Amino acid sequence: MINIGCTLSTLALVLMLSACSTVEPWERGALAKPQMASDPHPLQSSLSTHVYNSREAASGGNSAGGGGCGCY
Image (cartoon, rainbow, N blue to C red; front, top):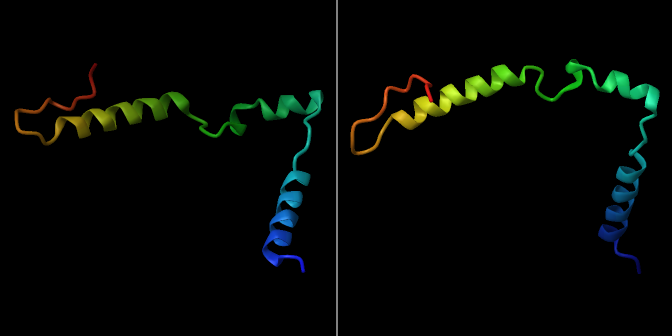
């Protein structure tokens, strides 16, 4: 008797692998646009992360903390 869980797992794996496709050279131009990036504003995100981490690091502790201005 065939295990139903194994059969469903195999079926799901086959369906996931069938979704993979190759990108033709003429289609790569559309995928290289800035709008297609996972982070459309990498410089702004980097700056925001830096300022947030600087402020969080300046709070707490047993001694006097920094100003949290986001400076290096």
